[in-house]
Image: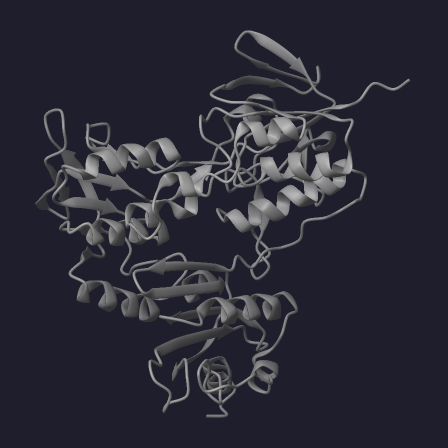
Length: 447
């Protein structure tokens, strides 16, 4: 009689937990253990800024599942426990002076915040946002803060900055690049967001580098571009990097991005070969960009979940593959929805693609219908007129357009095809000619 297999998952985030749940639904006998160094798990980190802003009543709302839920499913979740070592030749993992054997291992260790080498970064009053515990600490600090500073004008940085603004605080944002949201928007589109946030009295300094955080024990000032700004709370939000220390120690291949290298089935590689019973998924894994065909890191929860499902399918013998990604993303800052998919102009040029671009400004509803909002659209194509990127900004109607363009990019659609696409129309929710069509027509010279 065969003993039930043991599936061991390191990490209880948006990649690790879907693996456990999907495998359990298909196989009632396999033993499943999940180890996480966190106290809180199965929560939505993307909701944290909206709790701090008051849009969501409490952090409890973000916790989707508890230990009992997984216990009832027959999944053993070990919390507040750090894995010390993975021994692939021995099919074992060590933690807390214990060694646990596995038949199948999934590495879903996620990402960790980048800590730039700024003097004073370890002072009291300087925060990173990487867990619910971090969010609690920031919430507590906000009760006595007056003038917080955010280093980094990415999506999380701006969402947090707006949350601080809603609390009546004087907010300053420091961004090294020459525009906000530099990873998902071109400067001309970023400037639309800048104008909106400036109108809310958010102070944003672009092309500005934080050089020192000053204070005796607690932060009192921040130095940037030779100026000193008074501040009593600093949130460092300059991006994340794959959390791969365990994988490196185990001899697993790491790519040029710093992420774990896998095959198409998300099996890890070691000594040049795929390891049949060890998978990796989520923010610790490098993936392939559908436009540039280069390795990249996706820090999106949606990518992590999709990878988790692919890993679960393969564990169950389904032979699933994870393809290239276009990384559709959306940020909501105040009333503004900011969406992007594919590459920006800067990223395209970096990889040797000379992009063509078309921009359009329209309305989200018929001109005569009340409460229509301005909508700004930018489409990028390569020299063969294939769509390689889209950016959309408005107070409504952004997500659907970004999702549609993600699908079209995946199918290597040309702007000529977009320009003659049929779109639905009703005065309360759209204009007769969609701004996407208008932008595509500009690239092909039809307007």
